[in-house]
Length: 226
Ligand SMILES: N[C@@H](CCC(=O)N[C@@H](CS)C(=O)NCC(=O)O)C(=O)O
Image 1 (cartoon, protein in one colour):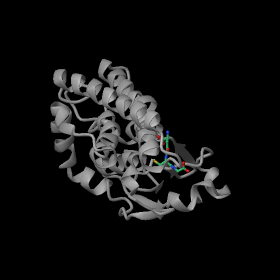
Image 2 (cartoon, rainbow, N blue to C red):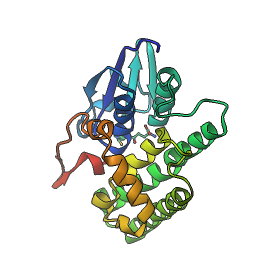
Image 3 (cartoon, rainbow, N blue to C red):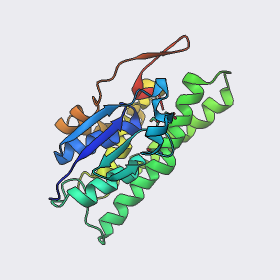
Image 4 (cartoon, rainbow, N blue to C red):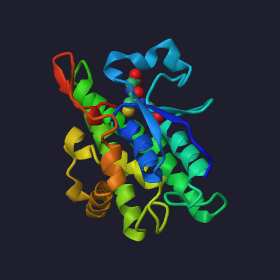
């Protein structure tokens, strides 16, 4: 395995924990720099040099910066998962399936569920249209995952991979943030319950330890905040 010198800039949100769970699954040493996004440190000049988009998570590995949670996961798997513990080898059909489900999360589930959170929990003016549109779309995406998991134990194939980690990170907060009843998606629920029991997942969701904070008059929980 190549040697690592990883610093993780993060907050325990659905996107943040994708990186910490991946690092924990790979058993890689890393230093955590908590970025409390409620204070906007992520928009400061020094941080924009690490992620020009001003969002968490990001990592540095020596002089290499990596931003966007999906590319962090691919970077870590490509460089440090020589044993293919949580990834498939490039060039295999399963690798393409893995990247497809990872992109499904990055381009679909994350943005849609993030908007649902925004309209339901944070929008200045209540919009029933916005709430319905994004919760319906989130549920539609859950039903796509449900169908896939009926035909395959994990999203990319027979093995748990970074594609499962990425989607799990969002599905776990559906019930608390959006009151989505996961028993409507029984196969997805079983998959999510199983993943939640993994030691690396239990460690990764607590990096750094989540604590509620105030946004205006609201009490906000990091797992529901993006
Ligand atoms: N596509 C990005 C999204 C990152 C993102 O939206 N991060 C949120 C937390 S989950 C954030 O940093 N929010 C603070 C902000 O927007 O200033 C990724 O997957 O890394």
